[in-house]
Amino acid sequence: MAQVDAQICGCPRDTLCDACVAQRSAWLTGAAALRGERWGREVIGRSTPQQRARPWPPYEGAAVARAIAKVADLSGDARLLELLGRHVHRWAADEWSGALAARRVSPLTHLAGGGRR
Ligand SMILES: [Zn+2]
Image 1: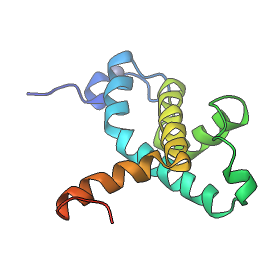
Image 2: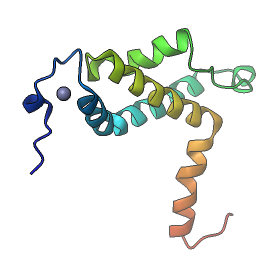
Image 3: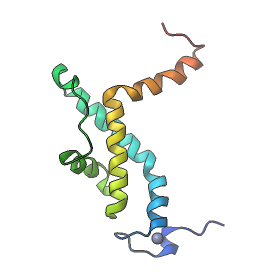
Image 4: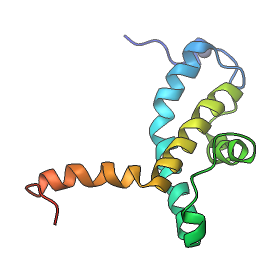
């Protein structure tokens, strides 16, 4: 019987306890990943070839604010938003660098009987 629900825990929504931060982070990781992937694609879509040659900006300054804005509706807790912001940022960076595309392609090539064309 899992009785770890935040409602039962009763900690404030904007000052979650460690257990609730960890649990909600696990719940929201997938949503953050999808948003990061979409963010990366959007930026790729409006970038020039010169911009595409640059690396994704590091997680600092304006990039932190942008990443956290992507998940701000998911929680009112600053620690949880910081974790999710890092996650969104990492997925966007992986989409930008092509690492996500590489991960997407490999299982499909196995399903199709393997081998690159
Ligand atoms: Zn709690």
